[in-house]
Image (cartoon, rainbow, N blue to C red; front, side, top):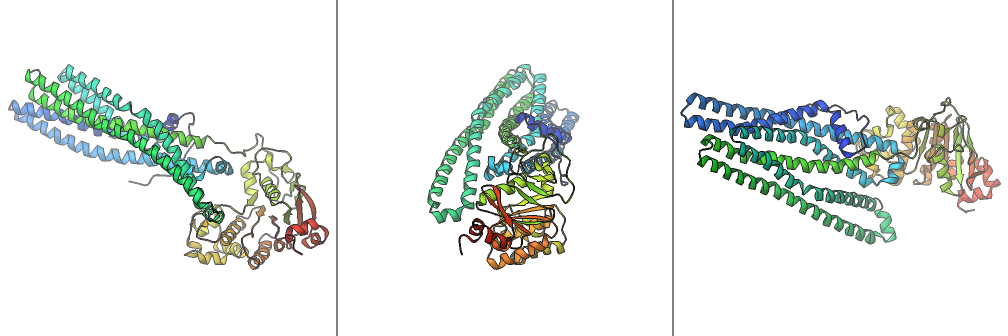
Length: 570
């Protein structure tokens, strides 16, 4: 099979789960129609075989050699047609499944990027992963069934026509009995639907709890909470197990019904056909045809039951997917965006009184680190709303600029920024192309050469997700190097050296100043080593700039500043 092209997700229909599934099918309309075509051809070819065999039996009984030979050739041709259409159908429905699954993953990934911090606030990581795996597969499975499901319906129609042409009563048995059997099995689908929804919800919650425990295991051990959290996880996993047992019990009834009900139907239909044959109402060949059809009908009926089950699962999965896609970010573009200021614009925050001229290296210390972090979020427009008192870039409130414009010009590099898995050089550069020389220069400024050596393969080596194979200081220096490689017009660094020793911090301080020469930089930190290299230091207290000057000037002029940056030490 040729590789699938990258799908264009487009704009999905989110009014209901069925509309969303329909939207996915419409995006690959030609491929879905081909799957239905080959599925119908595959099932119809099989449905015609019993009729051809019955005709051959009658021809043999009448000693009509030529007719018998033609009927045998027809059986052979139908077998070949079944093989060919079966292969084509399978290839097409697998392609449809993969297209739908990857399209959903693209939608979720793109929407997660738009949501930003909003997603982390509203949904846990485990829930998003659960939707991106099990639910995506369920929706793809529902689309996968379009080929076989349509073929099953087409086969039932063909069989009904053939049987009605042979015997109206026997044809009615099929027309009435088939849907009745399917309806009886379908009666089990509603409770299965409810239990599957409950099970999927608990599964997502348990995955989230597991992720939280693993992420905070060191902290839990330190405070003695490991046993308590383990007990909660154990209790929640038992709830999930009980719910899973209920789901499995309903599924076992469904699977049993898929065998029992069609079996009962085959027995009844065969008995009726035999009764007609004894009274010479049908020929021996027709008796063989009716018997073969009662056995064959187990396939399309079971397929329809499976299709109903997968449609239910797909509906549950689609509901959970569109629940994520319906989330809206806290931060949105203004209704009437302002004109973007030119390059080299000054940055001002009227709430705190902070001002950074173009190309200035500012140190920002605070009596309360939380207030400094809030200021950094306000500068980068990470706080919701369009408060006119927010930060101003070149005389234009950042709240009046498109979010993409703010993100491209102002980078707030938080201390806990995510490190992604992949080639180290690619993860450092991101979407911005970077040469080996510029990458090494950024690593040197962040004093992170030893980090490259710690990754097997160096810059071409694989970085684990979240940098879990690195120490806290190594991961922090990689984040700093990545921020420097982005080369934003305004860079806001929040505690960029909190996890490194004093010697490394001194090297970073000098390298950072050189790397950001002539570009606006705001370093949020109470580290004397960083503050001593700043053009100006602003001291934030009670949310306002309380003092400003060089580090040396503030040490003597502001006792509060001296206490904050020296931690009360003389």
